[in-house]
Length: 298
Ligand SMILES: [Zn+2]
Image (cartoon, rainbow, N blue to C red):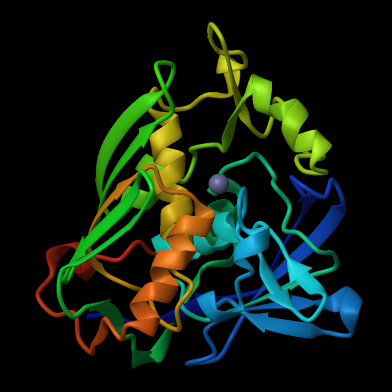
């Protein structure tokens, strides 16, 4: 079992949005018990949108996960959400002065570093979790997710992008596992897709420093690659961010094949609509949750 957690103090990050190409400053602030994670547009009179799947715009969530309220959007939230999930942060207020989170180095590592710089504050209420009430399978075309009820969070993820890119990884969230195995995995794309994304008005802030680019002979910027199987690790990073779009973290044994943001979030909506989630009040006697990562310089 563990208590709810937030940051000890506000941290700031600045950078460029991957798709919008717009400069943006982000302040990640502590938030009270049961506040959850909320994004706030300081450039729009403090318009706030809770980080919940009911506020996700599926139409705008093909290459990134986007919250929408009225005409105001907050794009590319997934890497911050993943870092929050991986570091067991439950309550955060995320202020930004533009429509998109900064891409930074394309991974979740800068958010992890910001959390380290702040330190983590344990709050005086136990955190509850969701899992599924029974085995659930969700399928769309060749995309597939299966989840079994569990008191741990495991993800077995498979990507198949044709002969150039097939990877598979089994990941269990435990002490330091997110930090070492997932957080540094960068976003990626295929060289031939860059033109298409630009034509759609996307990836304006993309560069060889913040995305691994796969050409016909392999990765064209391997100097920025951390893991040999970085692509599937990044898909797990994205998935961990997308399944955090509920009012509490989710545990379960997940098997995912060929997922993406829109598919991940449609799956989460399906779990809610079909009433397939059940609450675990106390995650007791689960070894991986006992020794929580507490990146506090003491
Ligand atoms: Zn991503």
